[in-house]
Amino acid sequence: MHFESDRITRLILAASKKAHRETGASPDSRIVKIVEWPVTCTVGPGLEGAIACESKVGYVNGAQGGLSYRGYDIFDLCAHSNYEEVCFLLLIGNLPSKAELRGFSDKLRDYLHIPDVLRQLAGFPIERMNPMAALRLGTNLMRHEQTDLDFLRGKADEAKIGTDEDSIPMETLPRGEEHAIYEFRRRQPIRDRNLAACCRLISGVASMAAAIARMREGHLPLAPDPELSYAGNVLYMTSGERPSAEETRIMDVALILHADHGMNASTFAALVVASTLADVYSSVSAGIGALTGPLHGGANEQVMHMLRGIGSVANVKPWVKATLAEKKRVMGFGHRVYKVYDPRARVLAPLAALSGRGKVANKGLFQIAAALETEIASRLGKKGIFPNVDFYSGLVYTGLGISERMFTPMFAVSRVAGWTARILEYLKNNRIFRPRVMYSGAVDRHYVPIAARRPARRKKR
Ligand code: CMC
Image 1 (cartoon, rainbow, N blue to C red):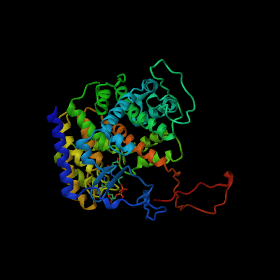
Image 2 (spheres, protein in one colour):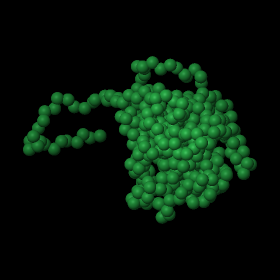
Image 3 (cartoon, helix red, strand yellow):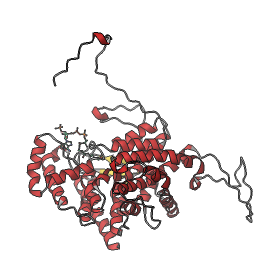
Image 4 (cartoon, rainbow, N blue to C red):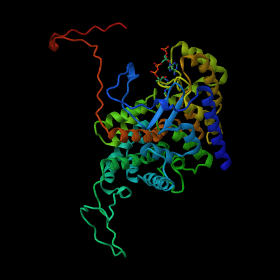
């Protein structure tokens, strides 16, 4: 057990060494600046270059292929941390003490229990729905079910006031203890309520994704196993089998790698909704919607179709030639920010090789992927196009027994941590997002009554 875990750590450390050697990837302390608004920047299409907000949650170094969460290098976190700790780090801002981590992990495990939401979800034709749409639906059901808990009954989050505090608004009756213990319910500050909702979502989205995977195959959802970690439970609740230590560790690393990534499209979508002061559930639901697309989180599923379509290592070169000649995109390659190798892909590649021996063999797909990487790097590397996080993640998930349609939901499971951390941060100093648009349409047209209109002539493209 330890051997496997150490092997994974060694693979991560080797990937880290390679990254540092090739791109010098390390967070650069010179990047930290005091932001003074308004900032001047050049904005391109797709808001390229625009600065949406200030953040201390995570940093993406596109030129050097670096990624850090709250200042901690992603390679170090993958090698030494676990997903629960990373969630705490992202949400709270620092690494937890032993006791804090235990309490936080227990809370996340507790929040994996959402039987009422799952019962409601099972009332929908999940097996016929796009799994990401089902996940969004589930998140909205959670909103309905859970907001009361966040606001009123959240026992674990309930504020307690000591008897030595001033200005006590009301007392409960002593309950026969040797020394009277007074507990007072007070309205939680909005931040605490939001924090409770964030933790519920981190766990709830995982339980829903696992339940959706099972319902799609005609099985009933499973309750979490109190003995397992968050990563272990994601795998167990999806497959119904207790994962091995190695599988759990690989899943844990995959969760860490996908947890946060700057102002990506889904994070921005979640923040836009949060900035209207809509609730965290609606904001996360927006994030799930944005992550669905093939240019974003949906790419991992497309990569598997592509690799299967290529079919053999021998077909890689002719396939690439034809694809690029048609000016088509190669899924799992390129990135708006990284112009060097994506550090997440550096870790996922060796894990894909390892997990290919897992529950579902990758049937030579890893070899095709490796040959494709070499071919694309030789043709497009000069343009800064290398594998991104989605290129090898599908192979990792497949090795863990996760079905293709569930790849993007699994990405969402991890990313809830980043979405919610950034929402909490943004709400501290909220301003509604409202960019402008460059209008290039017609002006001064005169309204023509319907009877007098002629069919508009279509412009030839
Ligand atoms: N295959 C072939 N050419 C590409 C690719 C690709 N995957 N990506 C970018 N290019 C070329 C593009 O054709 C363009 O070339 P030229 O300047 O000659 O016209 C140049 O690179 C710049 O492309 P862009 O469209 O301006 O880049 P972007 O920053 O708008 O798009 C991207 C970023 C990730 C949407 C894009 O690289 C892409 O479509 N990749 C494939 C889909 C994919 O893997 N998405 C996952 C992204 S990473 C994780 C995530 O967000 O989920």
